[in-house]
Length: 107
Image 1 (cartoon, rainbow, N blue to C red):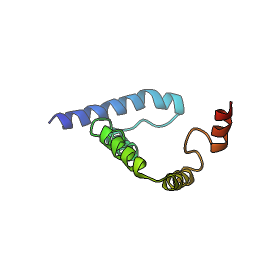
Image 2: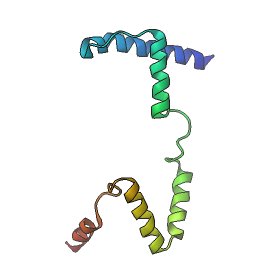
Image 3: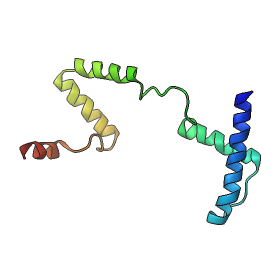
Image 4: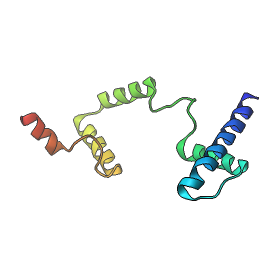
């Protein structure tokens, strides 16, 4: 019952805000209530929800599990792990490159 009321309320709020702001700002058309519900559903799919629920990546249990895995790795495995993530993230993994790190520690 509460979930249904919440969905209807969020749909109405989305429709109202869209229709009050976006036509004047961006020149888009006004939307219907069903279109507002569709936008909410799409945002849930794309962005993972409206809060609530358990976030597995931020949980202390996940962090502890990753710390234990990291502690069990050999230095070679750690370097391989870092290289793989650096490759996956386009070289933006970490705050700075190893050359920068060496420069900072030399000071």
